[in-house]
Image (cartoon, rainbow, N blue to C red; front, side, top):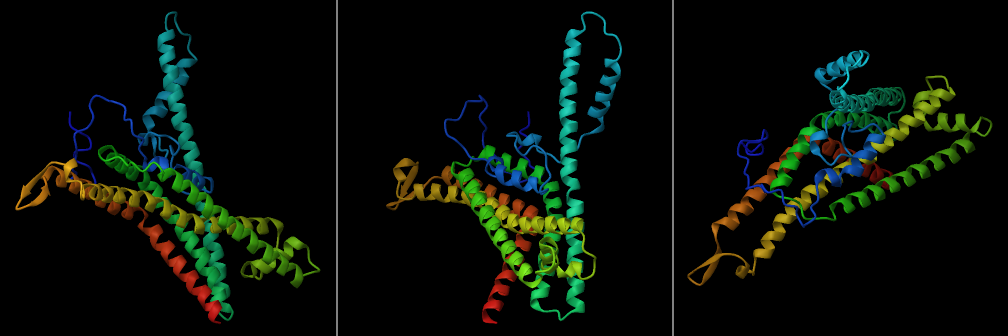
Length: 366
């Protein structure tokens, strides 16, 4: 039987090792890409990002966009029709088999519905973010057009673009995870602290971002009450915080709640993008560090390896360097593959961080 990882679709020069054919359990604990980013992806899906099914599943084959082909659905409908007919005696075995098939099909349809609902959150979020960006841009054109006014345009526009880019990432994510799983099958990650680092980083960044967001809301709330003491507190807060909306659109409680939800969603997308890139970088760095650890272990410990002596100089034999070269080639190919999928998010994160750092320097020097 042909090894399914011998020629991978990402490249025909895929190097392989002999796999364990006796299915012996490994005594060492290995880290996986899916396990390390499980919490990060789950938090992103709570806010409608990366809408893929099977994130909590340990089997990468179950990670998909939730699409269900027509054949299981048709079989499910056929079973529903047959279930209404009287069954002869002795058909319990077939009935049990059909019930199992029905449960599997219902689970697939359920996953499809949940994932479709997650995907449906993208459209209103992106549309509302684009609308807010347009209103900010319009106010910038009709007013003085200062740096402070353009900040809202950059913020909401970048969040709208980032939400759209996550659709591309979700489309490529199942293929990427399977490619990484093939690499892990050939060269497992021994850094068992990878999941802990990702979870701690996730908690620190999101808690810090939440504290910053709450403090900014408190400052805006106090400022709105001092500027508009005669108006209701919720109207004064919304109108003073989002003048680019309510200077042209009449105020309503429903619109104010929607704008607040969009602002919170935009703030989360802005912080989550950095978190997502950091956690993926943890995994890639751990894979490259693992190769460096092997090279450092070989240095000065020739007795642990097969070597030859030539002119009083000891050299490691070809098998060691061949395996090391294969590991490095897999790691380099993996970095290029990941960059092709999340490169847009990395670029947007770099642009946002650079812009807001320059903005803070501008306010300091001003």
